[in-house]
Length: 399
Ligand code: GLC
Image 1: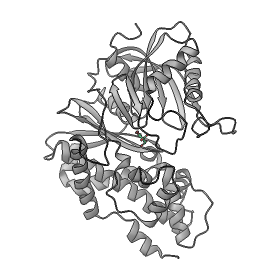
Image 2: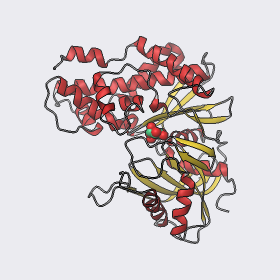
Image 3: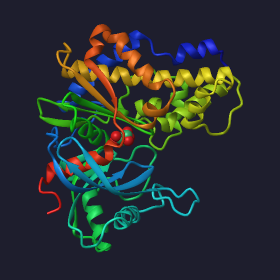
C-alpha cells in the first residue's frame, strides 16, 4: 500500500498534546522505577554523585560504546580543566571484515582481550594507574567499580557477556597481557560520563543524554545524592507508527528499546527508508543517519526525501524533548533552579535541524520558563567522565 505525503506528515508528527502526555507518562515511569514497581525505566543507580571540580590526577579512560573502543590517558588539573596525554581508538568491527567483536560469533574473552590490547598500545607495562571504564549498556551496578551487563542493546551480540561483571572480564584480560598494575576502579554509563564531564565545570548540570547511535538519559537525583542511569531508550508509552513496528520486529531484541528505535541514529535511516518506500519511492536497500543528514544539508536533494528526513528528525527531537520535560517535572516541577542538560552524540552535534527542534520543543512547552533550561553540547564526556569517575572512586590517582 502506498500513502500520501500528507498522511505521512500527520502520522510522523508529534503534537503538543502528545508531547505533554509523553512527559507525564515518563515522569510516572520514573516514579514507578524508583520505587521498584514495574516500569520501562530501569532507573539504575550509579553509586556516583556530583564531582566537586577539584578532582586531580592521571587516569586511564576506556570508552566502549559499541562502535569504537577508545583509550585515553587523562590528566585532571582540578580546576575544571584536563589534558588528554595520549589516546588511541579502533573500530570493534573491522571495516575490511577481518574481525567483528560485536557479532554473536565473538566471545567475551576475545572482546575484552581486544580492549586490553588497545590499552597496552598506549601505556608502559610497569605503569601504576587507575582506570575508569565507560561501558554504555544497561548494567546492574554493584558499587562504583563493579557492574554486571543486564542485556546488550544497539544490536550488539557478543556471546557470554550478558550477566557477567565487566570489571572482572577486563581485569582478566589485563592480567593475560601482563598489565595487572592497571586497576579498573570505576564503571559508568556514557550518559553518566557526560554528566560528570559537564558538572566538572558547570554546577547547574543535572541531566545528561546521549543523542547519537543510541539514546539514553541520566539525571542527578538530589534525594539519593546519586546519578541515576534511566536507560530511557527502553521507554515505550509512545505513538508508534507501522514503520516503528517494522523496525522493532526486524531488530535483535523486539519489544525492547522502543524509544531508542524511534530516535537514535542507528535506526533513523531505516525509518526514513520505510516511509519513503511507502510513498512509492525507490531508495537504496539501507539508509543511514549520515545519508539523511546529507539530504537535509543539500537543498538540491529531492524535496520529498528531504521532507521525510525532516519529519523523522523532528519527531526524534520532540520525543526526546518530552522525556526531558518528564525529568524536569520529576526533579523541579516549579522550575525554581537553573538546569543544564548536557548532550553528547552525533545527532545533537551534526544532524541538521535536530538541536534546533529540541530547543524549540522545550520552549513550546515551557514558554518563558525555558530560560532556566540550557542545552549544552559536551563532546567526549565518555572519556573525561570515566577519568573523573575513577578520581572520585580513587582520589589518590595512580597510587
Ligand atoms: C543504549 C544503551 C545505553 C547507552 C545508550 C547510548 O541505549 O542501552 O546504556 O547510554 O545506548 O550509548
